Image (cartoon, rainbow, N blue to C red):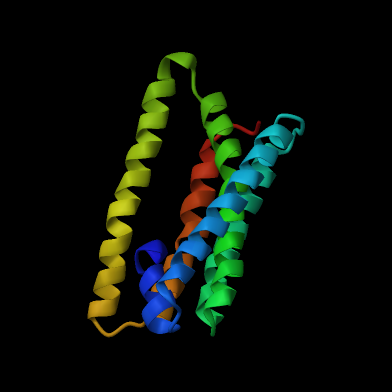
Length: 164
């Protein structure tokens, strides 16, 4: 939802040049990649993997929540990088937890189900953002709505995973 409107927010909402969108996305993706390397390695060495994954989800929500208060495009770099660092923290851990929570015969089904839900969210999020904007909402309204559901829906998904 957020990422469908973020380029418009940066350029039209904050008046940044188009190159700012590329800079924001490049820094966010780079920070996520670095954190993924570390979190995958680190999660194999700890017994409290689930708490670290929850921290990753929380970091993402905080980063996205910061978008509500942003007044200039360089601030978007910080918020977006923080959100994607949270994503980088949780993704390897979530995948390992998912793999450890099902038998080897059901790995494809489990990952397929996860990817199907992820794709559904990727399709529905921009539609909801468009609906919010079309009915008089602002970019900040989209950001508020986007940060509301993740804690409850994702924590429920984490409870289904084993405690590894």
